[in-house]
Amino acid sequence: MTVDNALVMIMAGGEGKRLLPLTKDRAKPAVPFGGRYRIIDFVLNNFINSGFYKIKVLTQYKSDSLNKHITRGWALSPFLNQYVDLAPAQMRTGNDWYKGTADAIFQNIFHITDEDPRYVCIFGGDHIYKMMVSQMLDFHKEKKADLSISAIPIPIEEASEFGIMEVDDDWRLINFVEKPKYRPKSIPGQPDKCLASMGNYIFDKEVLLDALNRDAKIESSSHDFGKDVIPMLLAEGKNIRIYNFEDNSFPGMTVTERGYWRDVGSIDAYWQANMDLLDYSPELNLYSKEWPLRTFNYNYPPAKFVWEEGDRVGMATNSMVSEGCIISGGGLSHCVLSPKVRINSYSSVTDSILMENVEVGRYSQIRKAIIDKNVIIPPNTRIGFNREEDIKRGFHVSEGGVTVVPKGSIL
Image 1 (cartoon, rainbow, N blue to C red):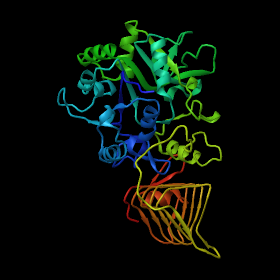
Image 2: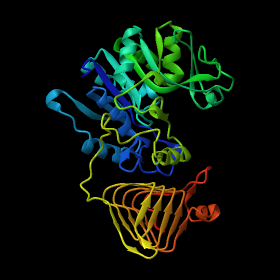
Image 3: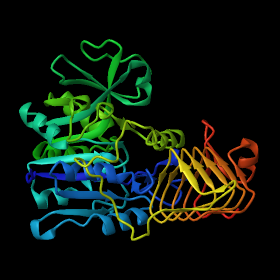
Image 4: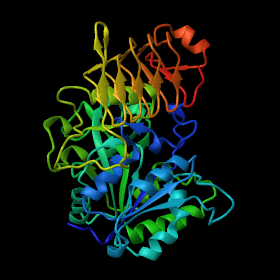
């Protein structure tokens, strides 16, 4: 099914400060995930698999690698008026970069008026999940909503980490609180849970254009959907409906995938989400034929495992190894490898993420680490065993003890 009356706008300008140093040279949506994907691939696949083929990707912060990835990997058919277009920040409404999420859409309002859709889907580009978006659009139409927001039930104790939406018995929005310091209203019938916003919106076009134009004139506004536009529409009595993400289903969905959504906004959350992929029955299944996960395809040769001489064995267990990798007499356990990684003899790597073009020297030991692109690790190097030592060498060590070696580091 093709959805022709909707325009998709993906917010991909995020700086991702909590993911430093992985975001030192790239926007958060461009950070590699699961070996061969980028974070933004997940929301793009959600829309393509749901039949939405008119997609604008709004970029701003350090967007070069994101631009290349979209241009090379996401070419749809212009003959059928299908596109994934980059929309870089252009300062079309003044001398400012995007001041907030609503301002980002306002500065690109001409895309909406040019395309003239009935509905506008505004989604974030930096979360890991699968979603049949057409079901949310059906919900929006059925409820005759002015705005629909997707939300996920979370334990009420975690409310202070999210934007929380309070609803009546018909799941109509009655209050929106950004990271509440008090105990928010629970979900009707579920006293121990509340609703966290996923930052995904479906607007009727006229409602959106009117709200953006009015918000742009309010000098005291921070021009943000959560802080300004939604409270304004709520105060005016607009029909704002909350779509329960746990009700969403998609072809090939496993039991564990229902309601799976991860904000990989910190180093520890990012590392854990990658490690979760290695479970025998992972919460997120990358191998579904019914829900293909597309990305840019490298023309690299297959992964190769060589040497089997005494303790010089090229081997990987409980790991994901991408194309172009050579495991040459070293051992991997519980690791995620991007393309073109080389593991040399007698080295040992465990519980780690190695990005593209990393080489691990002989006799090296790496544990619970993220090695960013283009790093050559000399022989006999130990990483992830001594926090103070790692910090002294200029590596970042997270609260959870994950050592990050920045892109292009010279050791």
